[in-house]
Each structure stands twice: as structure tokens, then as C-alpha cells.
Image (cartoon, rainbow, N blue to C red; front, side, top):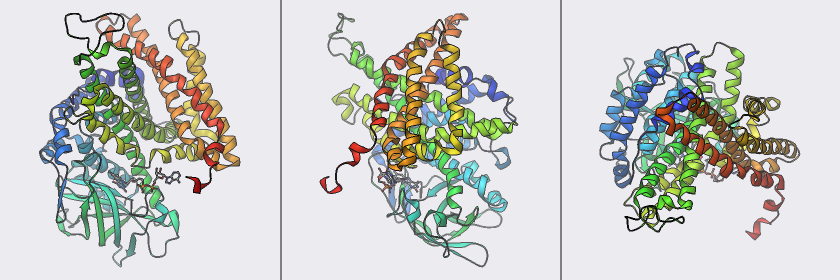
Length: 597
Ligand SMILES: Cc1cc2nc3c(=O)[nH]c(=O)nc-3n(C[C@H](O)[C@H](O)[C@H](O)COP(=O)(O)OP(=O)(O)OC[C@H]3O[C@@H](n4cnc5c(N)ncnc54)[C@H](O)[C@@H]3O)c2cc1C
């Protein structure tokens, strides 16, 4: 059964105890972000996710979106839910007050996003893309465009899209052909075809603001000749009201494996009027502002669906009666024991739980560094937070989405045949989770970003805000009476990551294919170690809380300690084989002739 209760206690743990409220309230504009203010917001978001969005998840999957003569209808209930979403102020949560937003921190926003994605990934995509487009416009558009477009986008009356992909051009955007011809009034006429455009057409918002990558007539070939344009569905009158329809239309929607309530559109731009965002031929820079926001958001989609899958699996594991415990019947009054007694089911549940809570901690850490990078008065601290976010963006995107899918698959396995059929809804999680590993740059491309662009940037500067605190933590805690026993094995895992980093830096310098061959394993190793570090910190916080007599919450903290131990003993050891694969290099995978495949 699709069941979801927002993990509010764990969210509070991450925000206030693990990452700590102090670093948030110390930031300009965040002085009031104490638990008194943030906890009720999270509780309201939980209600919205559980009561409004979750019931629409299966409806959306069954009905899907419908395309008819250029119009896209979202499934039953989506329009009403979106209206309630906007009226509740959820579209404006993290937007700047300058544009009508509430100016709340990313630390809070990411946790709200997790709840939306857990309840209904398809729904979350509509406001999610608007948020990304908002960021790109806020940082790169002219003041005039910002004044026209940002306030209605922040209200949710207008939604946003990103138009990159073309039929012949996905990962390699340098190949794109859509044209932008300058006009005397300073606008451009955009002509071309895009595919796979999420929220390209729908019935939720009054207007749709497309951010479109296109090429000007005299642009250099390849990636250096791409510019970014704002192309509205309806042109906008000087007073902000909607004018005539622009030449941007959906010509169809895709029929796909999952996220069926998200309209994935084929778009045709036929001399559609658009305006340049940022500088000519520097479109990728502006688009990356949107893509980085989206990459983190997509990572959180993985976490959300992974959590929902875990909760459904726990529900079933306690209900389903099959076999007897290997250590003797636990429920002799029943025909059989619930499957949660079996070690193999425990292995799956503990793995899912350890991944989810670890990933929530990582997302919380990155979100806090985003807040610091945007708000701190200390330029050095801002820089290190920016470096950390740049380093971790591909890790969050790829690790959390890989694990979201793995967790969904484990949930199907726990349901057995009942997971494979439709009735219980867990197979939807598996289908919905799969796309997050592909869009916003496939996970393979995230791994290349990590080894190719982030690892060596500025002589390894991006690595420092991660490697330094981890080394210091090991040094400070290796003899800790309570967690010291876990620090030793963790130090080995961290050592594997250091060795892998050195190996790839050297081998990749001589032969870029060596770095390419190691990338995916390196990203997983990086993620496993990052989560290990956070699990140790979580264990330290839990021990301190128990020592301080937190009796009313003893179960919560004891569960943290049990899961931390499971992670270090049963998951972290995966670091060693990953290092072995990385060190083996490209030879075995490149040896065979192409024709032999
Ligand atoms: C449901 C859905 C929604 C989407 N939403 C949007 C959207 O809103 N806007 C938008 O613009 N796009 C969107 N996309 C497109 C999506 O971002 C692309 O599908 C994705 O970036 C991959 O591009 P591609 O499908 O053309 O695959 P390709 O680029 O053809 O890649 C095929 C495979 O080759 C690998 N590969 C490619 N190049 C390299 C390389 N240099 N090194 C190693 N491996 C490589 C890839 O990792 C992949 O595994 C969406 C797609 C889907 C299915």
C-alpha cells in the first residue's frame, strides 16, 4: 500500500541537531529560523503531502496526462491541488522577498521538497521547474524581464520550463540547432523543435515561461555558441496582463515508464518571440544556474521516493505472515510470523533506512552550505560553501537517485509477487524513480562532472571543505569511548577514497579515459564515505542526547545508533571493492574491439 508519513522527527534531527540550528540563525535574514518557526512549517507541508498530494499519486499514474489539439490536461485533482499549493504560499517559500517570496532558507525548502516528492513526484515537477527557472532569471535576466516575470512565477500563477533537449541532441548540447534571429526591437525569433520538455504544456498555470537554449546566426559552433532565451507561452502586455499566444506550442506528449502525471512534451517553436537572458553565447552559464538547482532537486526526488518505498515496505513486512523465525516462532498465536522477523527482510529494511536517513543528512548539509554561500557576511566562508556545493551537486544528484531506485526495487522485493502487480502501488515507485537517474544529466554524466570538473578544480580546492572536516573528525574521535569502535572502520573507507582520488588524479592526467572508466565507481565511493561521516556524526549526537537524559525520545536515538552501526558494519565495507575496481583501470573494459559487441 502506498503509505507515507513525513519523517518529521528525522527532519528536525537533521536540521537542528546534526547540522545544527546555530549555523542557520547566525546568517543574515535567518535570525528567526529557530525550531519554533521552522517546525510548524514542516508540519503544514507534511499535511499537504499526506492529505492532498499522496491520494493523487495513484490517480495520476492511472490517468496520466492527456494531449488534445495542443492542449494538455493533467489528471483529476491536479488542478485543485495546484491551486491549494499556490494559495498556501508553497511556491514562494524560498523565493526572495524582493520578488514576492517569503525568503525562507534552502535548509527548510529542501525538506519540504522531499515531502512533496515522496508523496507525488509528478506533481512536484511542476513547481520544481518553476523554482529552477526563477533562479536562472533572478541571476541572469535584465531588471525589466525580472519585474515582468518573477512575481507571477513566485505566486505560481505562471510556471517555468527548461528547453534543452532536441531529437538529435541530449547530453551533447553543443549539437543543438534551434535558431534565434535578432529583431530590431531587441527581441529574437526562436525556431526549432525540442523534445522531452517537462511541464512544456499543462492546465495548471495561466502562462508558461520557457527557458530555451538556441543559437544565434553568427554564433560559434558547439557549446560556445549557445544562448539562453525567455519565451513565454502567452506574450505579456506592458501592464502585465496576458496578450496574444506566442509561437511556442506542444505538438504531443510522451508515453512513458513512470511519472505519468508529469507532462513530458514535444515542443515546436515557430518564430516564437523571445528575449535574451544573460550574454550572447553564454547561455550555458545561465542555464547551469537552473540545472544546478534542478540537479539537487532531482536528488531529493530520489530520496523522497526512497523514503516512501521504505515506509510501504515496513508496513507490509509487519503485516505479511510467511514462515517462522529461524530462532523460533515469534507469534505462535498466528498462522505464521510476519516477514519482518527474517534476517533477509531485516537486511533490506535496514539498508533502505540507512540509505534514506544518510541521504537526508547529506541533503541537509548541502542545503545549509547553500544558505551560507548565499547569505554569509564572511567572503571566505561563502567561498568554501560554494566550493562544497559545487563538489556535492553531482554526488547528491546521482547517489540519491541511484539509491531511490534501489530502495524502490527492495520495496518491490519485500512485497514479493504482490509488489510486482499493481494493487499495492509499490511498482509505481520503481517506475517513477527510474527517470531521476536519467534527466538533468544522466548519472554517468554526473560522475564525469565529479572526476573531470570538480575533483581537480583549482588544484583540488573544492575537495577541501569535505576532506578537511572528515580528517579532523577522525582524529578527534578515534579514541571516543562510544563511537571510537566505528571510527576505525570508517577511517579505512575514507582512506580508500583518498587513494582513489590520488589514483584518478594521476592516471586521468595521462589518459582521460582512465578518469572516465573510474567515474561511476568513484562517485559511489564518494557518496558512501560522505554518508559514513554523517552517520558517525549522527551517532555522536545520539549518544550525547541519551547521556543528557532524553528519556522520552530514547527510542529515536537508540534507533539512530543501531542504524549507524549497521551502516558502518554492513554498507561502508563496499568501499574496498569500489577502490579495487577503480585501480584496475580501463584496460579490461576497453580491450574488446567494437565489432565484437
Ligand atoms: C521524462 C523526461 C523528462 C525530461 N525533462 C526534460 C526537460 O524538462 N528539459 C529538457 O531539456 N530535457 C528533458 N529531458 C531530457 C533528458 O534530460 C535527457 O534524456 C538526458 O539528458 C539524456 O539525453 P539523451 O536522452 O539524449 O541521451 P544521450 O545523450 O543520447 O545519452 C545516451 C547514453 O549515453 C551516455 N553518454 C552520452 N554522452 C556521454 C559521454 N560523453 N560520456 C559517457 N557517456 C555518455 C549517457 O549517459 C546515456 O547513458 C527529459 C527526459 C525524460 C525522459
